[in-house]
Amino acid sequence: MKTLQIGDGPLVASRLAFGCWRIADRSVAPETGRRAILAAIESGCTLFDHADIYCDGEAEKLFGRVLRESPDLRARLVIATKCGIRKTGDPDAAAPYRYDLSAEYITRSCDNSLKRLGIDTIDIYQLHRPDFLMDPAEVAQAFSTLRQAGKVREFGVSNFKPSQVIALQSACPMRLQVHQVEISMANLSALEDGTLDQCLAERLTPMAWSPLAGGLLGDGPRRLLASQQAYRPAGVIGAIDSFAAAQGTSRTVVALAWLLRHPSHIIPIIGSTDPDRIREAAKADNLEISREDWYRLLDAARDKRLA
Image (tube, one colour):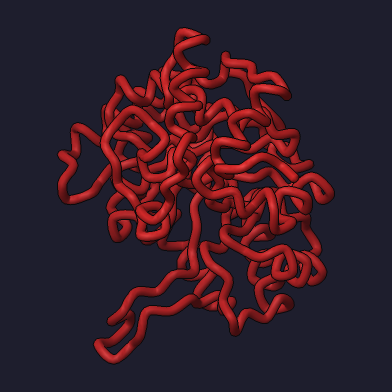
């Protein structure tokens, strides 16, 4: 699989990432999660996306066990994880679901992720959701502390508005390198709200979560979010299928390659735990989409022509 530079920093990773949010789900056997990780590596993925809340920390633990089984893997992989979401009941029964980007919580969450993953350094550490009480200077201090301690190499955000990225970057002595947001033919908001423009201007690498819209745009089972269930463009599936047939490939490959075509160098995050589907998704790295075909698919996704 081809690689690209992450942001403007020293990290280089595969054009597609593997998302670990379901590898240790209660409905997924541990061996299934392990096989998915290995299939992603064999398919050329070197960037692995985590978060402390994925499977309540069990995803990071499972990944850590795979690393212990094959210690040579660590040097080949770029490991990203996120913090900042606190669930109801944390730390006591009266606590609400909320976002917490206080310095204390960021640093404590980082230590916990390092322990679960069994590694010394996180390659990319991201803030999972914007905290309305976020103090950019406080976050910047937490980031500096983690970098000086050798616990984190690079930093980024997830699901931030462009204005929130500006506020945080203005306080940070280091450059933010990635921005993880929902991007797919079923969710074009990042194209329209300035998010991808900012990524281009600031050399932030976009990481696309749910690039197949919960399976709506792919060939496998569907795990739709409420917003994705409401998306019903009349012609997008037909347009994808028609293009896929002409190229001798699958709907999944086309939907991912469409994202790869964008000049901001979007990295789609593959979320399947099925090795065959992981291998199929990786083929998107080899499909080139012309400007004309890209716009044909955009028209279908918007369900109307550009004005």
